[in-house]
Image 1 (spheres, helix red, strand yellow):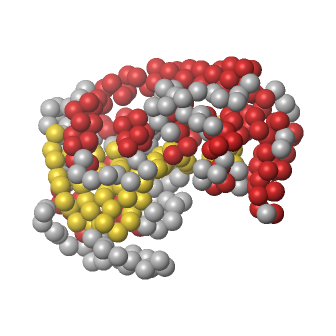
Image 2 (image 1 turned 30 degrees about the horizontal axis):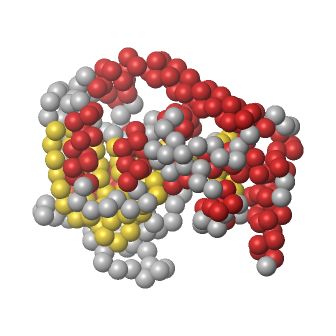
Length: 334
């Protein structure tokens, strides 16, 4: 009874109710909520603290920004009858809040457009070296289409393209990057999706380092590295860290360049590794307890794109058991 009363008291305020309706539409920074509500930041922060303590919302720090999203008490379905189905519209929201929320979406979209315009030349030069992205993405879908993708972790999400491709099929989708600016681009892209196209409460965008993932062991069914592993100084260690958060029997997909000798990619695009050989990926997978199950090469330019799919070899694991390091060895593709 006390638990229920705490939740009801947290919602028994017009401003807090407005905040909840807003974040059910879109994860928002505290500054954006202040902008929409037209209230002072200290006052808004007090309301957020009450919602946060009740479990109705949760705060997430991303660099110097703090974002608010639905918490466990709001995400478990217990308030669905109260709020109604918001997936196809803005039910219950005041017209002014709707208009200001759209202004936030527009500002994010403008920021993303400016970022892409400023970086278009360097990205175009890199894309011209390999097969079209659309063909790579089609191949990724084919490779992953053998089983449900479940809970997905996209490591190095960048501008959030994997959200567009796979979040709609995932039970939950976590997009992680170590660059706050990139995450704002991804968030802008997520906010621009058509209402009802994707349940945004199932998508989490978070700041994190692929060398030390801020995530619990054995928590994802699918882990994706899309054109990000070449930034790793120690890719074997990054793969092992990703394997730590993979559930028994889960899958890891790496999409990156085959080994090449284009040294300018180090200086112009900050690549730490000039692509990868099948041998290196196979050994890194094996050392992390992953079996290389599929390998695909996509030629069509100066750089070949490779897709490697690995499957976790564990069948079961006790709740507190952690992965033991294994001696690297080669395994044949099955």
